[in-house]
Length: 325
Image 1: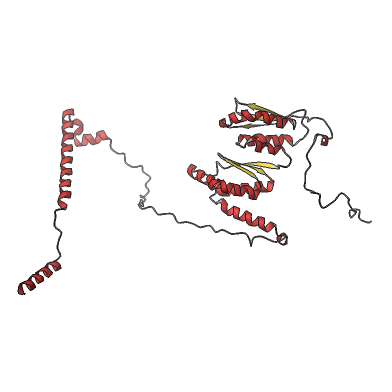
Image 2: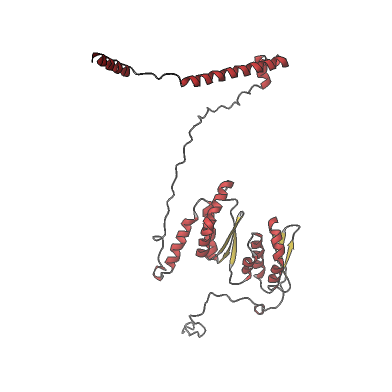
């Protein structure tokens, strides 16, 4: 039987982008009936975002109404809610609305966050970096590496991955394609594991140049990519090394109290007058010791230096020669 798949397809033109997804319109919902159940998502936001969200919430409501999504801003609980309505026709609209409120909660500005509702903007990712480093100072330094000097490292990452990236607090928010988001997550997590982002940026630049060459499409790129070796930097040894005491299962002996020490020396049984006299005597002794130390320091300047025996002999010989002449 002859094959029916090899027929000419007049609509299959090389100029057509087969991967392009057309916008989902209300006419595409063939049934025309509303959803049987209501779907909703809630996201909390920090206190400092309250004033900004108040200003922008009117625009957020209008943008979501076009998709048939209802939204509620609760300032008492500090939460944002999105849910489907009877006018909702796109099943994926509620998921994009969820991503929108998630981005707004993570300090992404509204003009940028609202792009997630478009079909061209594929997805977003919120990377949690707060639990990756235990030390706070170390965490701040490694987070700063993602930004780089004057934000240059972040700009380079955005250009190479074609994603929007925002570093805020304990999270990194990214918007873009799935492939770019995967690279952003890898770079951010490696940076928090003490691998500088410049190494990953260098690798991404080489990959972008190799992708332009069609001859290398079916070959392995491992020989072109850099392989960085780990260097174990020796730490400075401490100047004073404490010797470990031998292990004993018994606890150390209890230290005597100040009252016990006073009772042993007999100071505890002295009257107030005698204690004051004793303190005055101690002060006088300390003053005398300081005076003696100062005297010794002053007398050091007037002590003649010691002469060697050889220098004395040379002087005597020179005197004899002078007498003979």
